[in-house]
Length: 176
Image (cartoon, rainbow, N blue to C red; front, side):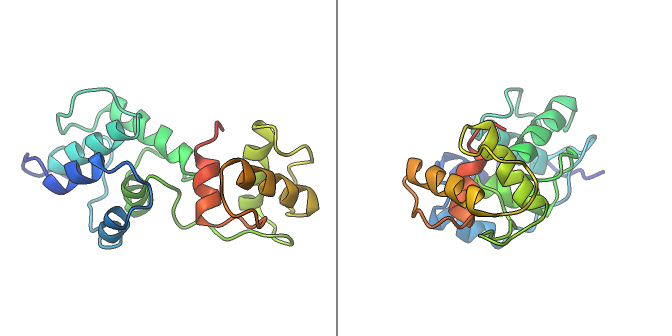
């Protein structure tokens, strides 16, 4: 288990105050993250930082006390779900990056002809939100492209039918 001394991290507070998901400040700091893996039983400053970030994104409502208990674990799982990560409640590198950026990380670029589980995720989220009416089959075809373009248009994104970082971010903000 990871344990460290308690003290408030100014970098955490500055990033938590930054509400722009893709700001230069947040992305610049995110690329140099070297954070410990946290899980149930972890304590200390890094857990306080985690609690602060989870609270900022609206997933944690408990005390900022540096104790990784069940409430923190459930908040982590909820956030991991939002950004399409494995929902294991363990905060590793990808979860830290997503917490600092406010967006999914390490997601593939998808377009007409793409296939696989990531396409199924896109189709499912689009279907749940009334954009896609086809089968969730993992095949990015014309119906998926039209649904992506409609989402992009609705969200003020370039309507190119390609699922890149900005479209993944828009998808992560939809109920799913």
